[in-house]
Structure formats: structure tokens, C-alpha cells
Length: 111
Image 1 (cartoon, helix red, strand yellow):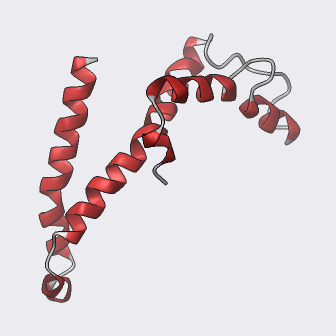
Image 2: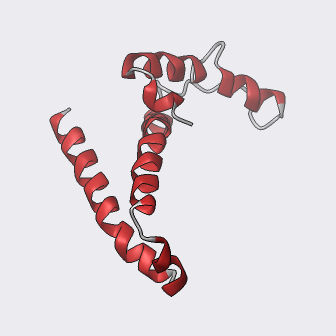
């Protein structure tokens, strides 16, 4: 689960460049083999597809970090509160989510 997060960003970029490659990309090969596409798409050269492709690659790299943050937040909730109310977990975990979003925003602004 932590593999995308543990990989350096340059390696993630190379992996996703190979996935989105026009001639030998895994995504085009998969979609062509199932008959979803008639011809390969140049995912990173087309403005229509480039932005969603980069967003998907970014999300893939950040999901493990979000999972670790949420798991840490859930483990911080006392067990007796689980029995009291399930909605309490959402309120208590909201601070962890807010902190994660602040960190992500700070990283994106600095980049």
C-alpha cells in the first residue's frame, strides 16, 4: 500500500510516463485489447487528456499518505467512543483531515 508514497517523485513520473506512453503504454494496450479504443491516444500531448492524467497520477501517489494519516487519526480515538456513537469518529477525525489538507496545500503552493 505504501509503494507509491515510498517511491521518489521522479520514479513515479517515469512509471506514469510509461503507463501513458503513446506507442507502448500500458493504458493504451489495455484499452485497445478490450476494444474500448480504436487507435492509441497520446495521453500527455492532448490538453483534453493531459490534465486528468496528471491528476490521476498525483492522486495515486498521495493515497498512501492520506491512508497513514487517517489510520493514525482513527487509532487515536479511544475504543469506548466506538460504542458511544459512530458519528463521533467523523468529528474527531476531521482535525486529522484538516491537517492533511493543510499539508497538501502547503506542498502544492511551494512546488
